[in-house]
Length: 357
Image (tube, rainbow, N blue to C red; front, top):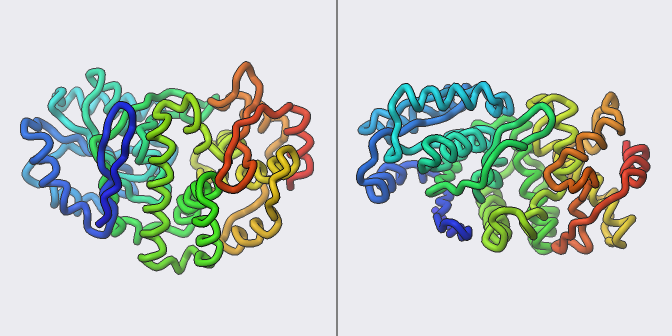
């Protein structure tokens, strides 16, 4: 097990990473919450079938309440959020209760927002079950979606801890492995050129990742996430760099319908677009074609679906949280490991979208 200390301005907490770390959850709860009244587990249909009994076995003495949301982005709606709050109220959770987020990034976002808003804030713990959640479980960004934009209704609300048991990752389908590993690649590109080279050299088949490669990749990703969060908890400055690839990526997700295109695979297309813009506008020396060949070998698509129109994608980008006065801002790279935020003219975006596929 590795313990990574997350240092946000509002709170310091630990991310425990390794095989079997869920066994430590009970003693953590006893040590840190000696007056704990109720536990609400928020999970989804898929994780519930695969792993819930194992978590309940750890928590048996507390007889937790379980709320099961739909799988994926369908969990992040007003209706599901309202249902989760109703369960909390009906079961008389109070300010000495705790929410356990048990699932991937969507469940983490939903659970954290429930915890942030129930009785103006109750504690919660992240228990990620996907690779993607190595990014989303750390840093305290919690939210639900709106048809007009992803993660537009939310809060900054840090967990009490992250228990990242890598045993849960063994049941992930290939699409979820790809989705999560895109964020690992993103972390390397925006922060650590040496880590990026290590990934290119060592990761050749995502379906054949060994435990050592996976553990190292996820630990590095969490440490990089912490490096940005510790300097800028509420995304007023450098934390925005973590959105590399997300401006176009979120637009693709929105246009496809949330849940019909995985987050990481959309972000991968967004990163390729941002890398091309970086070459063109900032003089970045980066072989995008070589990068595309590598990620295509890993199973990623490097083009967006043909039925998506450039004008609609641009409209969705204007609704991105980084947009200011409907001007689209992109995270670009001056060099690998040196991100910057730049306003990009609509005409430049449309011209590049026209040539992208």
